[in-house]
Image (tube, rainbow, N blue to C red; front, side):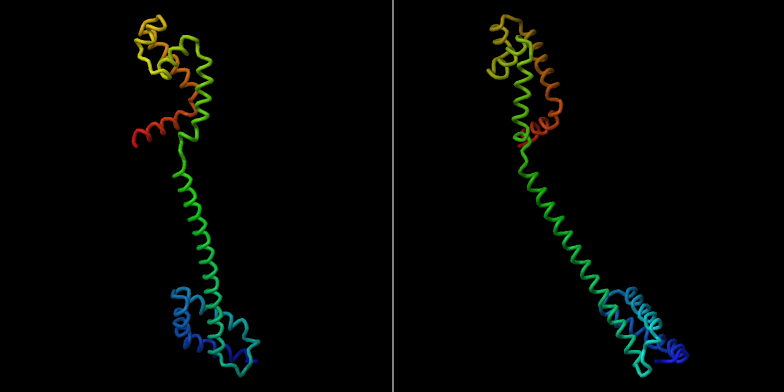
Length: 192
């Protein structure tokens, strides 16, 4: 083992003589000057902390350089693990984005709500007052004009207009939760 006084004298000399060389060597592997300097500083600290267990005939610069090498390897292994984790996260995020794109591309708002909307319209229509329902069905289902409906029902065209407005108000209330999707679907269909 090397004596404490020998090490103290030689430590300053080793540090001043080899620190810059060791930083250059470490930087060649870690590609970052600050990290290389930290690794070399940590290596000198490890050398100092283990000074009592170092054999007296040891080549001290080689001993310290071995510590630098091992610390560079540890840092590179940690970087490798970090890169794998980042790559896995990016791959998972990419798969999620791809799935979301496929899901949105295949989403048809009309088809998604069509059966529910039909049921709500059917149920709301059945609860309409009889004249309102008849006028609404003749207008929407049979495609008749207001004048034709007025003649068939024995009412004025103004009353046909009023009954249609009542029917639409009933339907708006019944479909209030679906209106944004219906409007979006209507808007998209008119664009295409």
